[in-house]
Length: 218
Image (cartoon, rainbow, N blue to C red; front, top):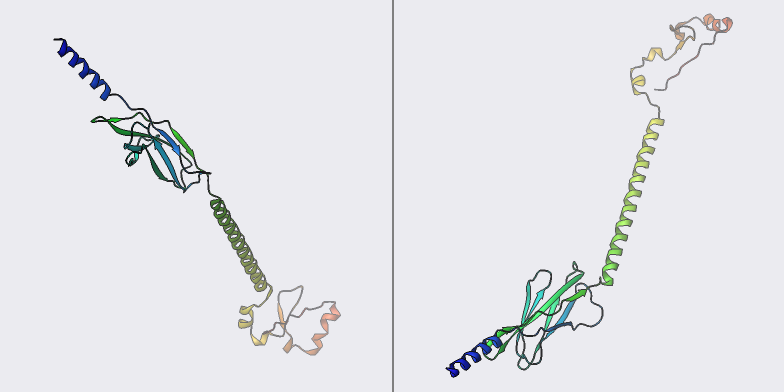
């Protein structure tokens, strides 16, 4: 009876041992220097030395998505993850964990502390953006100058046309016999001076009336 009790206690102890959670790993940045957008970044997940040859997992802390899985080589208790960053993300947060055998049972570890990364914009991005803005500005100025000059030229051509007085209707319809017509300033009647007696030519001056002449060029 006592033997069975001891065996039962040992079994309970084994169950408790095999069901415990392993210690959390440490997640750190291996890439040195300033971290830039679009750069490949290396992260290292390290488990305690008592748990070699484990399987390591990298997760996105914000979404919980498993990003990568890496198996540690023989006698090693750490792995390296390579992250490919983009030009649209400026900050990222990661966690990692591992699985390792304890005896014959595969156990999971606790999750590591959150690793926050802040990415900087590369210098060449500022250069490209600045050049693009300069090109757009120069193009806008050239287009504006072109439109202003074109409008100015059209207005000048219109003024030149308006300054030339050519009445085609008059030159085309005006009778040849009426070229010597004279008009009195106090009368709307017209007189054909070609058939008028020469003595009548002097009467306007005698009466103090000056008859204006209109000559139209054909």
